[in-house]
Image (cartoon, helix red, strand yellow):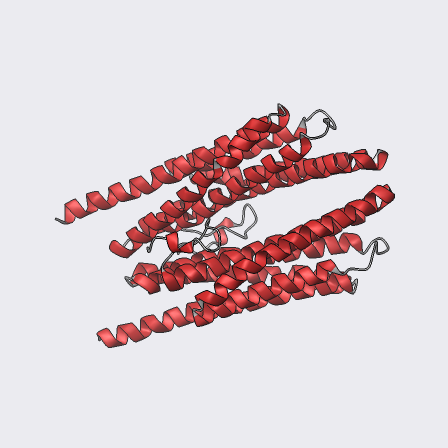
Length: 231
Length: 231
C-alpha cells in the first residue's frame, strides 16, 4: 500500500513537471511570435498572440491548484516539497512573461499604424537571448541541473546592457526629430519588457537551484551562494 | 498533546501573519519615502531608501523559509494551507514592490542632476493611491476581509488611467523641447513603476480573496469571481 501511494505521488509530481514545461513552452513560443509580429509588421500575428494569453493564465491557475492539492493530500518533505514550492513560484513568473508578450504585441499594434522608425537589430537579439534564457531555465528544471541554472542567471547582465544601449540609441532619434517620439517610446517599452522577461527567466533559474540544492540564492550576488542556508 | 500542537501551530501561523505585515509596512514606508525624495529633491533620502531594500529582500527569504518549514512539519489543510500559499505568493509581490521603490530612487537620483522639468502633481497622487491600495490589501489580509480586498482590485484602474495621463502630458514636453527628454523619460518610468506597484498590491488583494474564500479570482474580471472553483 505504501509502495502504491509512493508511485501515485511520484506520478503527480511528474504531472506537475509536465504542466510547468508545457506552460513554459507556450510562453517561449509567445516571446518568439511577439517579436516576429514586430519585425514582420504582422498585426494578425500580434492579435493571435494576445488572444492566446488566456491559455497561459489558465495554466497558472491549474499548476497552483495541483500544487495545493498535492500539499493538502501528501506530506511532501525535502526535495518533493521544494519542487512544489518552486512550482508555485515558477507559475507566477511564467504568467508574468505571458503578460509581457501581450504588452509587446500591444505596442507592436501601435507601431504598425506608422512607418517603421529604423531597422530592428538589438530588439530581436534581446528576444532571442531572453527566450534562450527561459529555454535553458526550463531545461535546467527538467534535468535538475543547478549549473545550467546558474549560467542562466549570469546571462541576465547581457540583456540589461542591451536594454540600456537600445534606450540610448532611441533617445538620439527623438533628439533629432521629436516627431519620432511615439515610435521611439514604443520601442523603448518593448526593450524594457524583454529585459523583464529575462529577469523572470532568472527567477525561474534561481528556483531550480533552490529546488536542487535546498539553498535560496535569491538576493545574492553570483559567487556568494555558499552563504545560503539549507531550508 | 493534540491541543498543545494546535496551539504551537496557531502561533506559527500568527508569526507568519506578523512577518508579512512587518514586510508590508516596511515596503509601504519605502513607497512614501521614495516619492518624498523625488518631490523634495532629497538625494540622501533616495540613497537611504535604496540602502534599506536589502532588509526587504531578507524578509522575503525569511517568510518563505517559515512557510516551507511549516508545510514540512505540519499537515496544514484548507484555510491554513491557503494562508501558507498566500504567504509564499505575497512575499514575492512585496519584494517586487521593494525593488520598484529602489528603481524610483535611482531615477530620482538621475533627475536631481538637472533642474526640475515641471511641478509634480499626478505622480505624488499615484504614489498615494498605490500606497493606499497596499495598505488596504494588508488590512484585508489581517482581518481576512474579502470585500475590502475586492475593493482594492477595483481601484487599480484609476492608477492605470493616471499612468496614461502622465505619459501623454510628458510627451507634449518632449515635443516642445527635445532637450527635456531625459527628465521626461525618468518621470515616465517612475509613473510606470507606480503603476506596477499598484498591480502588485492587486495581486496581494487577490491572494486575500483566495485565502478567505478558497477561490482563485486571478484572471477573472471583477464580477465574474463566482465562476471560481474552490480549491
